[in-house]
Image 1 (tube, chains in turn cyan, purple):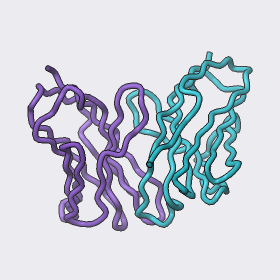
Image 2 (cartoon, chains in turn blue, green; image 1 turned 30 degrees about the vertical axis):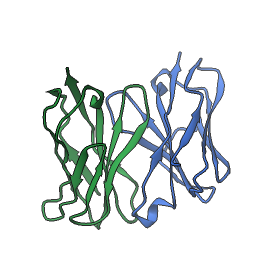
Image 3 (spheres, rainbow over the protein chains, first blue to last red; image 1 turned 120 degrees about the vertical axis):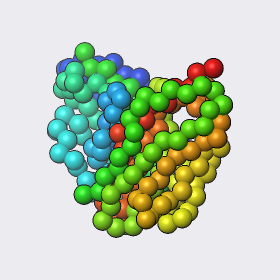
Image 4 (cartoon, one colour; image 1 turned 135 degrees about the horizontal axis):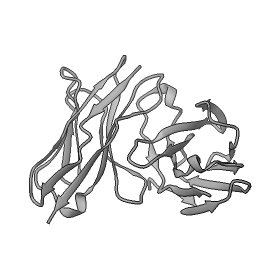
Length: 116
Length: 111
């Protein structure tokens, strides 16, 4: 089973709202990722967690706050977002940390976020 | 740093036509290579991969061969279907690097 699940599938929020995106995998993977994807573009890396610790933050604004409660779960907390943050947010996982090379990423279906 | 180049399209084909989507890469090390497919409104799905030179990845009638001498990983399918309409991303993963994605190629298959 190579399934990564994400909830919710769609989310509409105002600029003053606080919301959270959730991601779950049960493949025993030790690395999990958040990506942002704008229309007609490839995914852009936001954060990487390896062994439940934040290992990479690609200079993401603080209005995005990741959390890894355990090895199977990854959250992305959203607060005071801007309309330009509207995008598809993708979660992915891999067996081990990306620094070692030779990893394969498995993606979830994404959360389509609209900020009004 | 590492990079991936692919034709951006859109590529428009008739059903049962032969498909080639070119992908070339630059890498400092010896990366693994991937093709991902993204159907409308969905996430990325791993289509196939290859981890060393001359490896051929294959899945659902799609094939790609890891060519180290030409730093290429072209995607091919002998007979496309309308259901293959999607965006295809070539990607690589190298030691000590994050995953690198190409810009994506949009494929439209007409009945």
